[in-house]
Length: 310
Length: 310
Image (cartoon, rainbow over all chains, first blue to last red; front, side):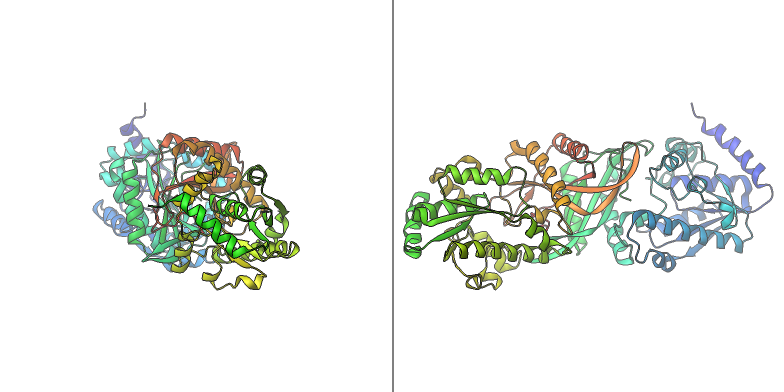
């Protein structure tokens, strides 16, 4: 049986031993994994930790403000980096899922590495958990925070990696979050991928397409928050379809709604969501987002599907 | 109140008056509209009608054989044209929905016109119904069998048009089919678009993609035939998504399942199909079609969506 209290105690000692009196940087996305990792290191090394929030332009509605506020409330020294323009630039012309992931990852580590250099920091904290390692090793996905497994030498970016959660699965990370007294919005936070909304725009990622999927995501989250599912989100297709808006034929966007139950993200079941909820989502999305004419609901389990589309 | 018997009597007289002792050709796809139109004209002019079945390579599993057999049983003189290669050639490089429709329509009328010329025929029968005319005039879609409304002069193809059903809506056409004693497979047949499976392959139409959507369509029709819905079908996306097959990460095809209730196709409701049925469809499609990793269910009504995707 996993003992969160014991884990925290051992973890703090381990981190102190590794870091010594050196400075540590942690990119915190606001997800449970990276926030727990950040807070653990903060507790271990105090002011020698600098948390970084990289605004890549791919976050959900209000998310940047929420994360910065949360870190502030936790008294963690925080650096906000606005890198929206740079991130959109690397996506230009890229339509392949793996190419997009690579572009994101590279820009992410370059941005983080630059910040680390500016602050003369040697260690970078990563919220890697066990499922990330397993799936990356198995080739199911290339998780951006499992550098070694994908053949990247972290030191080439100019730093060493500290991964305090690498032996935990998601439910254990949540237990640690509760043990640490983190707010519910963090400890119970829905998983959200590192490359954020860029994985949920099929084809080329542009600011306009991110705005569409951001709004659709907000609607899906609002309408499904009572379901208690593992993950609820929206995906914007690159394909278009015919529809009718204001009595006129248009060729518009397609949004897929994905709602799954899972404990560890390794397998997942498409939730059998009541049709009243799906109809309301479909109505809101097609009414509130002018370019969208069609909503689909993903009915596939993992496997044979993955949770995300890319 | 519509009187099918009276309609048939008047229709036969009208057709005889228009055709005189000239020959007539009818392209029959096996749908209720074109089969009723073909059979009406056959009853009116007998052996002076030649029915044509154009195999464009875009028909559902077993459909070509079914239509030819049906016409044979009805004692209608029938000509079978294998135009599969020619149709796939015109789709090459075309990804825009309207361009694809135009390419289909043009190839269709050229093929029919050539057959008419060979047989020295002046009149072509069309199964146009009132909804086709209304939607084409409104610009909701460009129906391939409403030539005049889309600015095409039929005589430029070398013939005149005979449209015996142009004042009827779909339920009335079915009544006429029953009145004429046509088999149930025809009178109750699910609507199927003229350009067939080409509308259900987003992006470029190729023989390989048609094979995928044909198999998915067969599965959807088998699993939903007891629902009694207006239309049930599958659509193959051009977008791809990640999935897991035999434990390996793959980048595979996406199929959408569309099941709607409607009386006249002018408006439609997405059917709230029980999840047991949707799960079975998703499982069968992802198991029986190796390239497919994901199944979606269309939850949008018409409007704001259309029934078909293109």
